[in-house]
Length: 149
Image (tube, rainbow, N blue to C red):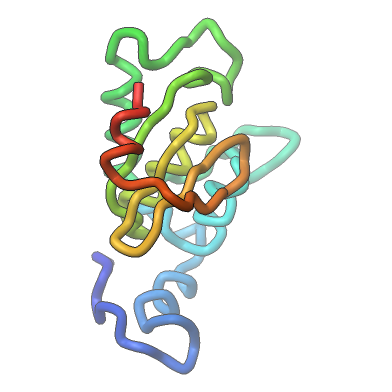
């Protein structure tokens, strides 16, 4: 299924009909990483479905993951000598767009890797830092981009 199907049409079963459809997909059938289980794990930095065995990785949204994979190849961006969750420690990133498909998952993935991530949308700016979300007052998209490494 390619989202959005209905756009942001309100529904009785949640914020939108798309949200309802996306959340009814079982994680066992979800190849895009957009169902409730995978989204929740992503935003909580849970990387495996079967803790403590850690043999079944969570599925991640592919476009956001591809951005991370590109950044991993950029010099001085990812430090693989640091432990998992700290590869981008000390980096500041600005993600423009907070869509459920690319922007929000990308911001979460980069923050889960230790970066400070400004998530900029038309209505607000948030900072993902250390597993927490902070609303930024007084910041502009331009000021966030200027802070980025």
